[in-house]
Image (cartoon, rainbow, N blue to C red; front, side, top):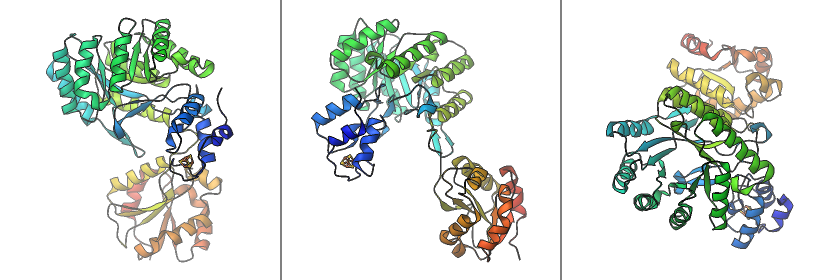
Length: 451
Ligand code: SF4
């Protein structure tokens, strides 16, 4: 049965040292009880307590790390069925398949795209996470050669090694074990030997069954043999079956605490269709419904970018607005005669406004006021972006030392506070800027400091 925060607190060292990045042991205990942190995040907990608490407070879907060190990719750790109940913890890994029967130029283009396709959105870098290397010829030499090539040319990738042959897997693992790849897969025929390999190399093992029942049997056996870190492939190779299996796995783990299915899943849209657009649609559905990892047949920007955006939307925490730091941001190299613009610290607002200013090429001081992540009008309505607070921020921000003029451009939606702001900042002229960010460049190009 799950432990409460108070029960966990009793077993903690109570140093309140903050080394777990949480200020107090009580707050840390509450987070462990809620499945938001792992007991191992406290460096002072001994192994016996770790085992006791870890087992009782572990999330129903185990958190799995594929890869080594800081570059490791975490997946799983989920505690709910719907994002609005709490949040989803680790975003779906997106990977590409490369196999030994593929022509050299096809391999090269996938590796190049893996390295090249990277996007930034609201300050978040979005890029593919994994490369699945498949021993399609059942031949150790070509498998090892391909693994070496991937390691040399896409060194940032976390790896999935795919082979049915234990001997071939062993050979490939030999050249990349430091990267701690995911070993794919233990089946009913080879589970014992694959388990030994995974244990010896300290790698996560994927379980592949013919169906859910098969997966449950293999997973139970592996856990009885001491393997704790698994990834599940139910063998489904149609969209309908994969979707159903993902839902069954998630519900069984969360609602029934059914341990054999309490692991992240891996899905292969690349093996469900030859049509890249259909593959994208299948991937999109599986990202929305619980896939821990999806493997694509190719990486193309027009498919990848929408999947990244979908993933970003699903895996942001609905209880924590995305924010940027309260600060004075110099854009395009401003000087003492440059305009001063203010807006809120909701990430989307910041990136849209800063993007328009950068695009205008007009040197500008952009002041970002902490509004707790609320957008302009919402923040104003909530009393977090009123004239008094803006005035306080202007005075403490240091902007008065950076510019000779005293003119502040406020968002068009704040036009109603112009008078109040002029009272709060008697030395400043307040100018109402555009309502829409798209009009900012033209506005700034025309701007001259008030006389
Ligand atoms: S690191 Fe451990 S002892 Fe320190 S505050 Fe966190 S839980 Fe408490």
